[in-house]
Length: 84
Image 1 (cartoon, helix red, strand yellow):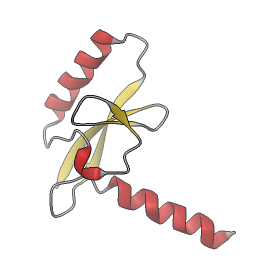
Image 2 (cartoon, rainbow, N blue to C red):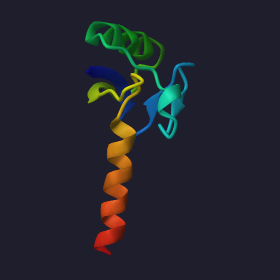
Image 3 (tube, rainbow, N blue to C red):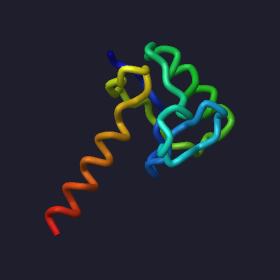
């Protein structure tokens, strides 16, 4: 299942409380199965902060409906440590 999150250019992600977070807790991230809802949220954020550089990211959901993006991050970090 595809879901959508909002990610800033520095890598932080939008939380359910409309605060930017590093994304370590997938259950606390803003996510929606509808791209138009994510785009509307992004437009509201841009109206408050015109310097905001963020975009909608499509990612897979795990069994509980949370973004599986964090699992990909952990795997990439493990690969970097194993390569060194």
